[in-house]
Amino acid sequence: MAMKKWYDDLVERTQVIVIAGGRAKRLGVEVPKCLLEISGKKLVDMCIESLTKEGFRDFVFLLGHKAEMVVDHIGDGSKYGISATYSIDPAGAIGWGKGKAFKYAIVNNKIDRTRRCMVVFPDDIVLEERIFSRLLMHHADSMRRQATSATIVLVPGTEYPFGVAEVNEHGVIRKFTEKPMVKLPTSIGMYAFEPEVYNIIDEKIDLNHPHPIEFESVVMPYLASEHKLASMFVETKNWVPINTMKEYENAIKILSAKR
Image (tube, rainbow, N blue to C red; front, side, top):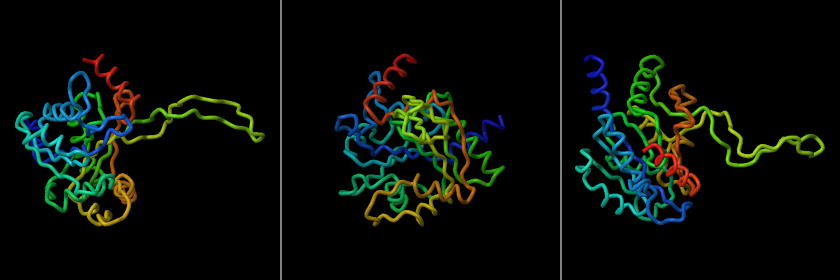
């Protein structure tokens, strides 16, 4: 009972930030990527339902491209049993990056600065059971043991999307491997942040900067340099990203078989 209460308290103090402003441009469709369907279910619905099964109820959606379509679909969140808050990128801000979108939500009080958050992407599907519970408990344990303030979920390696050659000093290829597995810890787009990270986002991200800013390019390196960033691993086979039509077709195949 004590463990359950501890976990319930962790969940209650955690808001879920769903970054769902991406376009499906590389997939050749105009709808927001989070509204793509697999086996008749939209990616954002799959994401929400997975989280609510583990007790999460407080959601903030960061939206951009055709945001009204997502708002119309989710509504106030009552059909999922959640509370839904929206932060919509201002007009003309298409492609300004996740970092700016996140800061915009903070400065406009869409994100509660007093509570931790779990950041997820509907188009990064993780097949591992109770992944969100595991992340939250791992994050809390790392805070206690290592004084970290953020956790990033990784896979131990991923498939490199191109052919790779080994070339000798004479320019002759000695070995060629098509799409090798690269054994480098790779982010799968799932994070946990303590409130102190919001201050770093405030400091490091400028909404008036002329170019897009990704918090993975600015905030994560800073946290790592300060030894404030913990890691948690899942198996590569349990991560199903959707960025291209080929990956989308692969996700349909995997999830259809699983169901």
